[in-house]
Structures are given as C-alpha cells and as structure tokens.
Amino acid sequence: MSALIELDRVSKSFSRGGLFSTRRVEAVKEVSFALDADKPEIFTVIGESGSGKSTLARMILGIHAPSSGQVRLGGRDVATYERRAFMAEVQPIFQNPFEAFNPLKRLDRYLFMTAERFGGATGTSAVDGSVDEALRQVGLSLPEIKGRFPHELSGGQLQRVAIARALVAKPRLIVADEPVSMIDASLRMSIVNLFGRLRDELGLSIVYITHDLATAYYISDRLIIMQQGVVVEQGPARAVLSAPTHPYSRQLRDAVLTPDSAGAFRATHSRKAAETPGARS
Image 1 (spheres, rainbow, N blue to C red):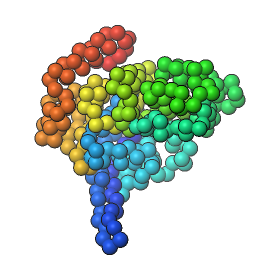
Image 2 (tube, rainbow, N blue to C red):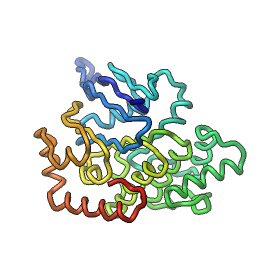
Image 3 (cartoon, one colour):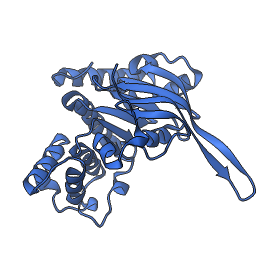
Image 4 (tube, rainbow, N blue to C red):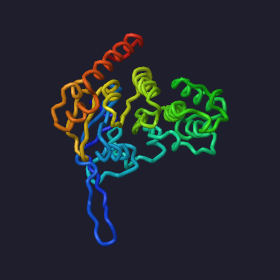
C-alpha cells in the first residue's frame, strides 16, 4: 500500500502545572494508522472531550510536532515540508465556522487568497473560476457569496464556505475537526452527506474528528476510538460500532447509538445510496 498519510507510533505530551510544580501529561500515546493513497476514504477518530483526538488532528496538520513517532505525508515527514507546499496537500476544516473567518473581512477574500496561494490559480478569471467551482461543489456559488460578510450567512452556509475554501486548494486530504458540532442539528446530515460526495466524486480522503457516533456510523469507512490518548478499538466503522469489544466503546455505543437509532441510520444510508449513483453502501 502506498500511504497518503501515515502515523507511526505517534505520541504527544505537554507540561502542565503552576509555579512550583509541573507534570507531564500524555495527550496521545503511540497512535498508528495509515490511509491508502489509492483508496479515498473517510477515516474517523472518535472520542470524548480530553481523549486526545484534537491533539491528534493538530499533529496531522503539522500544528503540533509529535513528542515521539512520526507523521508522514506521501512517505515524507510532515516536519520537513515547507508550509505552503504542505497546505496545498492537506487542508483543515475547524469546529466553529464563525471563528474561522474574521467578521470584518469579506468571505470571498479568503477564497481568492487560497486559490492564489495554494491552488495555483493566477489572473482574475482563473481565480474566480476556481473559487466558483469549489463553491458549487458545496451547493453555493461565487455570485451568492461575493462581497458578503460572515454574519450574513447561516452557520450551515458558513461551514460550506469553509469546506469550499479547503477545496479551492485542491488538496489530497482534508482534516475536519468536529465540523458539525456547532451547526444546527437539522443541518448536520447535509454536511455529513457532503463529505461522502467529496470522497466519492472528487476522490478526497477525509480524517473526520468527532464525538458523535451517529454521524460516524453513517459516513465512516474506518475508524479508531480513543480514550485518554490511547486507541482502544479500530477497524471498519460498521463492524466496530455494531459489535464493539472494548468496554469503553460499548459504553459510548450504548449511550448514543441505540438499536433504534442504528436501524434508522442504516435505513437512511441505504436510501441515500440508492438515490446517489456510485455512492458506497
């Protein structure tokens, strides 16, 4: 397998404490997994607050350096990448779309800058075309967004703009850290379905960070479950969440994904698959 992204026994610890005493806290402990460069997938990292999943996301994005182990993109340590070259390959989508954009800055400026800096577009026509293409992939368009400020859009629309901004760079990997947790519940599935379309139609791989087992069950190909920085279970998403073996995994599943909700999500997924040509089962 040629790996797109590979984590090799990655750990991260932080120093915490006051003036007279400090202690080392291990946020992530020897996590390993890889995504196949030739097989786009949605790989989900599940865990409650404090499980280490967001720290793991930041190491994949090159924001935090591992205390030990290595994160490799295309076989190369991410620490050796020039930042602009890395961001052309890997793009983030963060939890709160209202914090991702300066409220005093027009949204199209973010998109234009990304197209020029990471997407390789030059000239007004090429930049506008690249931005409009990315917006249309998320159900919007440049005429709808041009000149508008963040407060003029709903949370769901703004998160779609954040996703379009990532797509403008034409990355191979998107790291989405709790991308639906700040969005109204009625709109969450539209964003989750969008991730499935991006995987199937654009060949994008997505690392999806979440505490939400319901959306993970619905959209994931593979997953890991983290508890206090340690991977306690991993494998194909449906198999793991339908019959978890670790006590912590069972506790999460029983608290969130009841038999009724699992059946509802199976039915919804089957219906969506039937409606969408080429969608995965």
